[in-house]
Amino acid sequence: MLKKYVYVAIACVYAGIIFYLSSLSSPPNPIKAEFLFQLYRLMKDAGVEFLAYPFYFAYRYPDKFVHMVLYMGFGFTLNPALRNTVGKHTELYSLAVGVSYGALDEFHQSFVPYRSASAADLLADFFGLLISQVIIFTVMYVKSIKGKAERGE
Image (cartoon, rainbow, N blue to C red; front, side, top):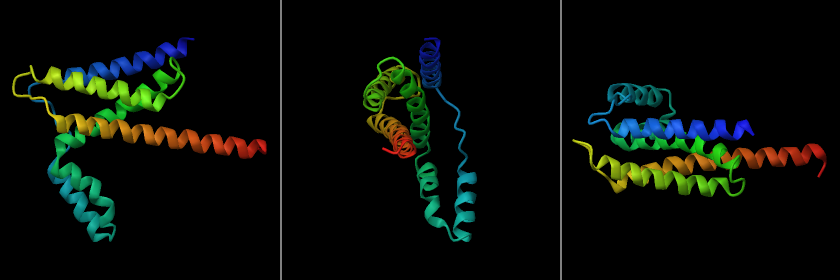
């Protein structure tokens, strides 16, 4: 019973962190373009340039990349909170709740000096949430297949 509230509290704290970061006129950007460029060069020299494509996205669109990563983390906190409260279709509910929060967050940003609401940011939020839910669904599916195989079903 207590576990349910812990998961909900973690999701709420994470949502609060997103709200705080959105309220800053100039939020910190932990991704340095020079680091990403050097990482790309290193991967290219090693012959695994194809692995660098996500880093190119982060280099080209750092704001959208940060949105995706933040909301991917949010999705990882929302899913267990909803699984322990709602119980069914948690991936879909996590997407719905996360995108709704993202839309409210964009609306909130429209009132912050030097910030603006953006449909592209909301789309990046959606993709971050979607990635997290696909990962969770895949892990849960593989676990269920493995469990069935171990039981001989």
